[in-house]
Length: 605
Image (cartoon, rainbow, N blue to C red; front, side, top):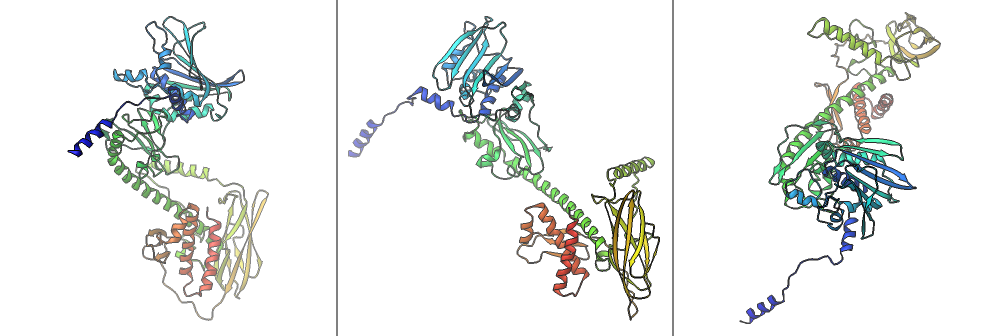
């Protein structure tokens, strides 16, 4: 019994009531300053015009009486009228947080964004005074004026020659701290912020920047990349989720925005903790996720209330995320293959350039210095002309492509010449061919309007065809050193290049060795072996260099593409030296690797 009496006494002490605002003006001030982005405030003014069924909106930025102003004019329905046909400014000013649009939505109106009745108050973060003008049914023009920090408002008729349809909103003077309010920035912001609202309503928005003397047209933002089709449908009990996603190359500008009914509320989904994961954080996606059933924070309208609607959105996107992750994996694999082919082409080209300057008999990896049947060593093989199934038409197309390629790769004037090879060994009494490689400043091979003159400047021997690109050297009967020189002339430009020839003799006859298979420069592949010490291995059967992409050095080099390229190039140099100089002492191998790396990285671009 005592316990029951205590319970009744406690129940008598419990009281209830309703929350009330203690200071109405203080609450209005807090609401007005809750919007922190002036551009977002302008977007809300434009949305009010779109909600009023405007077809044309003009935003003007300028100066009058030495004060900066911003004016927004539209041809919409204007402010709703009262029973007398006069714009009901009084209702707008005295019903903060009780918008007329909310009742319109209840009555079934669609395409209306606002519902809180606080959008006009955001002018506090833009300027000092807001003046709104619109016409009544009586043909007269009326205006309302509000001032920042002032709880009062004024209504008055305005003298005009003609009463224009629509609404004119002017904010003046602009706040001193607003320096980013250029017409171009307003254009870009509205193009992203109101992308789908502009596209769906068909409204035409023009920005006139009188201070910069420029005019801009606001077009809905266009995304780059490949539009993703056949994504899993995403829907909730609150409505359908609209997805427009594009797959692009990875970059910091690739973001997916969250929208509500065509208006962007979050610029990047990864700003929300629930979406800080793949695929949204991959940097390979652009586009929008539009959920019209979301609940926004009333003040800024850039925040999401994490209620049941938001929870349903996260759940509905699970299947979409799994599909996007698979697509991204395929995209990355394709990018890696393209990058590998590009790196391989760059490295092979650099090595071919380096071998022109290095002794061919020492660096004969895969017999690159040996010419094919029927052509001189070092000369270029004729490229076959592809013939399609269409016969003569295919030949014509191939010929046109070849001519076009020659046109775009046409070399400039002569800049330098190099003898290939620059250093070589020739047995006594034997012959060897040497080629003059003329290049322009961009290292393109020059082939036209050239005159050649070969001569022996040191040592013995004979030269044949001394006025051609390729010369034949015949070694003397005695060992020694011979230096040959070529002078190449184009118009009044003369360039020279030398080559050093070592003439050798042997006491023992040379043993004939079976011909080896000619492979050419190999490719490369990756094998992930973290924790193992080896960096690369040469696979003779597959003719590839296997690179350990799990090695800590490879991981370190992969931070930058240029660093990774040089790392792979040095692995190639290491394998070349090991192949060409078996049995050499470690210090000699290091000397050779430094030599080869120097000549190769000079041509690495």
